[in-house]
Length: 169
Image 1 (tube, rainbow, N blue to C red):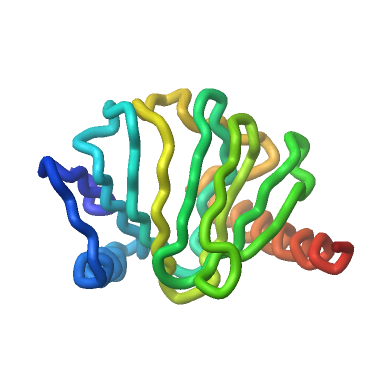
Image 2 (image 1 turned 45 degrees about the vertical axis):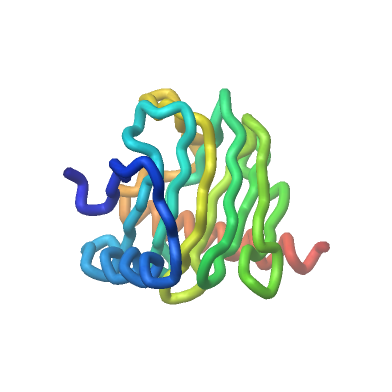
């Protein structure tokens, strides 16, 4: 089993602050600093509900979904949400936090990514399943996670683009 993800096997799941703290602890124990608690029983379920923990500045490659919408709700911490045009230009940027926007929903075919701003961020994600190889559509203009040098370059560029976008708005 993947130490970064856990699929619930119970019929009823209750999530409280104690569980959230456990998820954060599990994320700290992973070398990558991530952990995903899936409320659904498997990746093949028709509805995916996940509590996701990520560490500050974690890179998750921008993606879009051709057949499903996606919603996020902040639980703890803060993250920057970036929405892109198909060519990689920024369409919108906003902070998801208890002091800002607390939730958002995007339709199909919108490239998006999140950048954690706090030491750890916890958010709730909902989208339709099942998860397949074709669930995520990645743009050519964003590097894969394993290409660390290109990721560093991309993140430096995207942070500058965010700064310019925010100054123009």
